[in-house]
Image 1 (cartoon, rainbow, N blue to C red):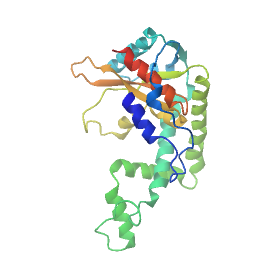
Image 2: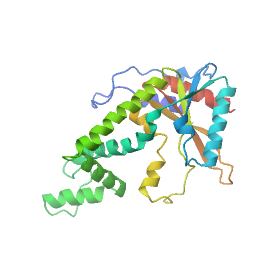
Image 3: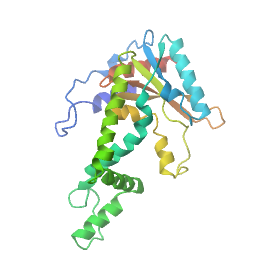
Image 4: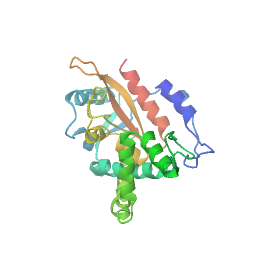
Length: 262
């Protein structure tokens, strides 16, 4: 966690060349780790993450062990609910492709992105540059995003998704009024072999537990929780989540969890 704190200090903060970066103070995250402890920390156990089907037995075992570690280290464990979590996957795969479609529209080989050497005129420059420069998943997201932003579908898909996103964020705001952090699995399965999963939907489902925090604009971190006991010894992480701009608190909790395993 010390490495993560040092790296975050270098990455965080206002960028005068990027209007989307917030102008908020950046603390010394590494210094804040000193004396990190879980004693008295309220950690929420969201039932929508912990009782969901499709989670591999080894991931569930290691997550339960991590929760017990937190309790043994002095944390107060509190059951909580994030009722709109079930819509997060659908919402994300409307909003993210829409933003990809809009943001990547300028990557046409003229000023930005790959420029095809085989182009013979302006039209073929656009077509070949984008065909050669984007991989299958990026193309898939651009097509989906363009569709949900198109006339007649914007309100039905993108507009409604943004409204549900607001509800998801509200869930987190209400929960963080009661607890300091949440603990969840990081992914529903251990690592799979490179190229083993070709179905896009199956790949998307691996983001099941990380998507909601991204939609809500809260901070989260994956921390090593152990290795599978199925003979493969694959690493499994658990996810800690804190409120927006609470990275300092998040890193301290993760550091305390890290120390509890030594």
